[in-house]
Structure formats: structure tokens, C-alpha cells
Length: 457
Image 1 (cartoon, one colour):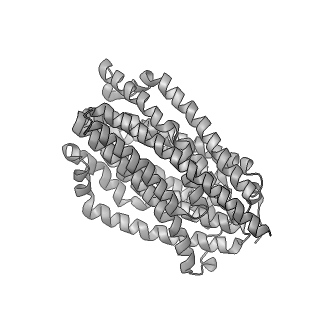
Image 2 (tube, one colour):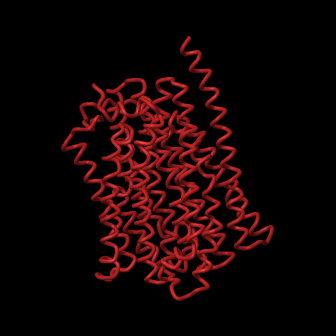
Image 3 (cartoon, rainbow, N blue to C red):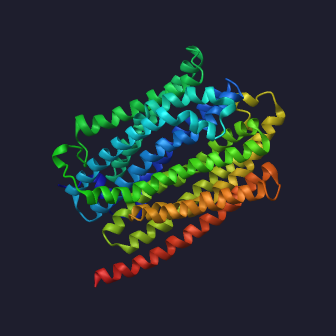
């Protein structure tokens, strides 16, 4: 099995490889999150109730995507290491194994949604807006496989360095959703159900495009053909060693959002949850560089690890962190300076200067939540790249759940700082967790250097 220009482009200079993989991904993700913001803007026109319902449902929606991202991370990590070790035929087998795992997980998510969705939403605090939340959530969970699969298939394109095909369907997805949202929500008068239908249909188009390239056109490096499938429990194990922790990390992000929603609800009420829903969208945008560069880092660090190339590995860690921080700093500055006009763009607070000012104030606080994430996130993605998924998970739990949520609770409740305690505590916990994570990956990088030196001898 011969390499192609995409493979050659990711096994050389790690800086060039990261740039090639990351920047188109950032663009496509910006479109996707712009699409999510527009979702919120259209739904906000229905009132604060539907918008708050969207906020309560968003963590569960992200869990579904998270499982897809997690399985994709496991596949990306293993395939990249196999490519680095020049085991090209085995990389096809690994790709097919990831599709099998995704199929099983999709069925499990569907069953959970059918039997437990209402109970979960009530537990998360959505009792006051449960009907709106169920209208949106039922559609998402019934067609959950359409939400999950694109993340897995996209990761296969990234693993083989075909960034154009990994990102173009995302652009189509975002554009279709932007077009369909007002039509389904207002023209057909479907309300929040229309937002869910638009999300599902636009994501389905994304999946169809990618499957066309793999199953019909068949001009990709990786081949999704059953003739390459040889069931190996070791491959399932290697994928799951990364995908299970990576999926849990995505679940943790959702749990964090749920915890913040709950703390905000008991300290300030439903309207503040609606405001935080808007602000959290922008926090997610600030996290985009880390995600885009991070998934690229999985590929590049995995190849360097498979090839036992310490210099490329070290360059990957340092360059990924630097570029992520630079872009995050720029985004945070934009949000801080333009917080007020950004806040004016949401219909449910239009005409209410106090609420506009409140949203801007919260946004200006939460940009500091984002600022140092590149240091912690890079560490987590590099651990995924080398197959140490549980180390990545441990750092994420420490950063997001133990430190960030704990400090938010500590400041808000025991120290009686109320709603400001939630925000300031979250920021302080995040900063501490990020620097602990970066210290861990630098220690690992030095240990890897010794391994490479022994291998060379």
C-alpha cells in the first residue's frame, strides 16, 4: 500500500503538518459555532424559556457529539501511530474497527434517549422548561447516529492528512443549518422543534458527503472495505484505550456545563441561566483553537511517537501550545473589547439595557476561563496521540471537574459570593488545572527522549 501526498505532508515537519491540518479545521469549526450562535439567536426570539431549554439540552447534545469525537480520537491516535510505523494495511483494519464501535454506541445512545431523556432533563434542573427541552431533545436522541457518525468519519480523514475532505462537509453542514433555522422555526412555525430538525438534516448532509467519498468514489488512502476487516480484539482495545477516556472527557465537559447551570440557577435564577447559555457559546468559540489544533496534534504526535522521533514530538508539544495560546489570546481580546455589541445581538435581551450590560459583564469575566486552556488542552491531546487516554482523562477531570467546579461551588456557596463566586471560582480552578497539565506533558516529553535514545542504540 503506497503513500499519497496527504500522508507525505503529515510525516515530515511537524509545524507544517499542524498548520496544514489545523487552520482549515479552525475555519470550519468557526462556521459550526457561528451556526450554534445563530441557533441560539433564532431560538431566543421564542423567549427566554426555549433558550433556557436549549441551554439545559446542550450538554446532552454535546455528550452525543462527545462520543463521536472520542471514538474518532481513538481511531485517529491508532491510525496515526500505525502510519508512523509504516503499517498501512493495518490502518485500514483499524478504521473499520472504529466504525463498528460507533455503530454499537449509536444504538446505546438511542435506547437511553427513548427511556431516560425526560428524567435526565429534570435531574439537570430543566423542570420549569421541560416541554421545550423535550421537544428539542427527543428529535436529537432519536436520530443520534446522524449526530455521532460524522465526527468519527471526519477523524479518519484527519488521520490520513486529507484535511479538505475532513472540513468541507462541516462547512456545508453549517451553511445548511443557517439557512434552514429561520424556515423551520418561524416560517413553518415549528418553534424549538424546527431548530432540532434543522440540526439533524444539515448534519445528515455532512455524513452523506463523507460516506460518498469513502464508499462510492473510493479514492481515499484509508479503505472502508470489509475485505480489509480482520477482527482483532487488540485493535478494539487500542481504540477504546483512547476513545473511552476521550468520550468521558466530552461527557465531563457536559457535566461541567450542567454543574454551572445548576449553581447559576440556585444563586441567580432561570434568566441568569439563559444569559449563561449565550456566554457559554462564546466560551466554546474561545476553545475552538484548542480543539482544532488539538485534533491535529493527535495525528502529528501519534506519527512522531510511532516513528520514535523525539525532536518531532517535542516540536509538536511546544508549537501546538504556542499557536493555540496566540489564537486564543486574540479571540479573548475581541470578546472582551466588543462584549457589549455582541450581547446586543440576542433577541431575548434586545431593548433591555440592564440585561445587555449583564451579559457583557459575564462574558468579560469568562474570557479568562478560556485564556490558559491551551496549556492544559495540548497536554490532554498529546496523551491521546500516544495512546495514553486515561492520563488525558485524569488531567481533564482535575482541570474541569475537580478544580473548576469545586472552586465555583466553594466561592458561590460556602464563601457566600453568590453568582460572582460561580464565575470567579471557575476561572481560578481552570487556570490552576491548565498549568498542572502542561507540567505533566513536559515531564512525559523528557521521558520519551530517553526511550528514543535507547531505541536508537
